[in-house]
Image (cartoon, rainbow, N blue to C red; front, side, top):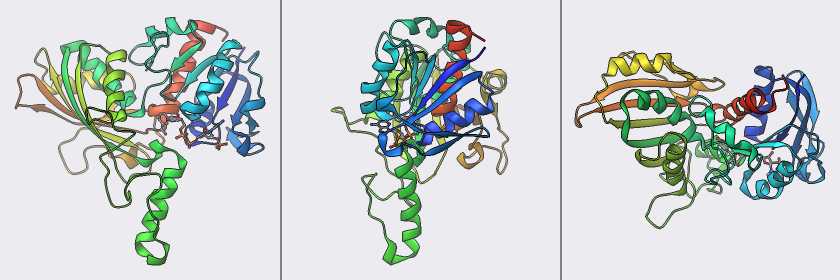
Length: 340
Ligand SMILES: NC(=O)c1ccc[n+]([C@@H]2O[C@H](COP(=O)([O-])OP(=O)(O)OC[C@H]3O[C@@H](n4cnc5c(N)ncnc54)[C@H](OP(=O)(O)O)[C@@H]3O)[C@@H](O)[C@H]2O)c1
């Protein structure tokens, strides 16, 4: 027996990947509904070798549906997630709306699957920010061995993290660089993204950090350990898909780089590619379409007592969003709904 599954935001970047991953992982689906805004009513989307016709979320009745994977942004989520949850459907949400709510578990299944126990309080589970998800997968097994004191992370985030309009902006601006009559002014981003990098993701906060940086701090604490000190600088780069992160970690105990490599090789969801030679590391274009979080450039930081540097790369639409959401759905199926 399978589940009745809703994908809300089926016409978007993340929704598209959710449908792909549900099919790839053969999630036990009895019935599936693809939802988006009224603008997309009737739009066809693929689910394995089937074609689904998108419905208007406003008209949709969630009664009798088991799981709803949401990827529609915070404003629309505020309206429709409570409606789905109230109808008895377990919402797994990709927006940031519920991530910091004490009654809503924030889950990365390789890291804190036990948090699923709290999901029936509101019938909502939050999926973390894309940059947080891949980083905590890499940090957790190291934390278990040597206890992390402090993390300094710099991100190199692809434009797909800002949705499909941002991907178009990078594409059009890049073409416009070669054809002067087709120059494209920045619209999604505050400055030109083609052939550039922008040290600004989401809104600025009073202390000078950005909301994206704050999210990495708050979410890492909620998912792994509130005692970890963390500081982040989040940067948008002209890459279509795949986020990269340079992560500096300070531990309570000494952790040798070879032992760290062995621990990461054994850890769930991680693929270590770490040869000290030309090309012996992973770059974003190589991680697209993959389930794994890749870790490269594992090396001691000898400027502090117990320091390590790592390079973490993953497909932000997959581990950063859709894959993690489907893994949560699998967890809910196993631990909560128990139909399969
Ligand atoms: N991209 C990432 O790496 C990433 C990672 C983690 C979390 N997220 C989150 O996932 C969500 C979706 O991101 P995305 O990258 O997939 O964006 P996207 O490509 O711009 O797609 C947005 C989707 O939301 C739907 N939508 C927008 N307004 C709606 C409304 N009022 N009612 C119903 N549906 C509505 C759109 O439907 P129409 O086509 O009908 O407009 C579309 O299906 C966001 O909350 C984002 O923060 C994204």
